[in-house]
Image 1 (tube, rainbow, N blue to C red):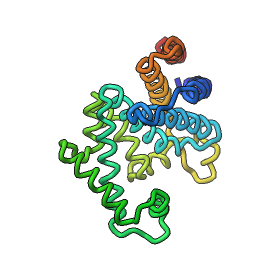
Image 2 (cartoon, helix red, strand yellow):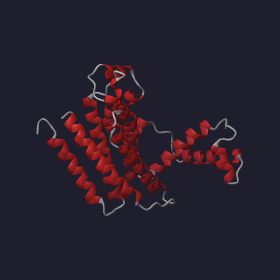
Image 3 (cartoon, rainbow, N blue to C red):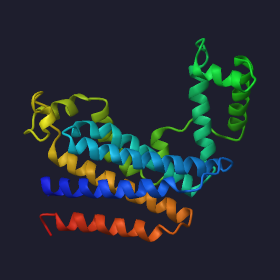
Length: 252
């Protein structure tokens, strides 16, 4: 494994994300079907995150992979839940309204949200009241704020929540052990050599593997859900990923 594994995974992620980005850009977008519209948006986002991870890994900035991968994993969880139940969109809508209305309890003059209200012919107060009514209606249907852990549970990914996701959160929030871990290992990224900071090679292997898995599984699930002609291509990428892992493993 090691550098050979990282190089192979980076090359794979580069090719696959570029191909999937093109495929996703051609999918029909029906704004009236909110769940599907959001699903395609999440897919495009995951593909863009994968492109970013490739750039970070190749340009000596792999320490910054963790927060991008964390966001990528969160998006993947939403994709899984939306595919299983399109009604999950209303959960996302409720959670958005809950956060947004809290932040707008004291609106700032000139805020872009106020501009949106005026463009729709509403005063700020009437617009916020309309959103509050929508939130109340969703709560009357039983929707309540869903914690991240519960999202993972719904997607049958609770082990991922306590495993890779927990570690990505530690890296993203610069927890003491994460920061010290960067200082205590041999140099890997030339871009951080002058600072004495290193991203552990084993950790980068794991992150690149998880990135590739998320990219392939998300696109495979989406194209299967939409019954597109790209389902076979998605399956081929998954098989290639397994082959890379097998061929670069020290136990192969």
